[in-house]
Length: 92
Image (cartoon, rainbow, N blue to C red; front, side):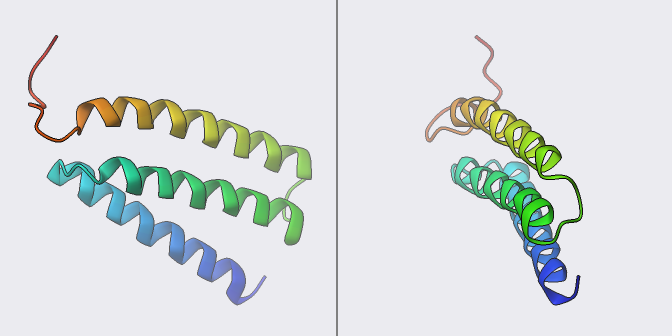
């Protein structure tokens, strides 16, 4: 496996920490960094399945599909929650 998989997991960890920090601080850029996190996760799933051969390609495609759908759904929620000028504690 070597350094490529270590670099991929390191990138995942860095983006995950940035996402957690943005959400914790309630920043408007939390949506963008969350989408970047979803892209990194989906790319890693494809990387493991197709290039490294660590899992069957169909399992990698299924995992990528679930990541894309859940990231998209949560990004819509975050977009509303972290919009600029809004009050996060406000309940409609």
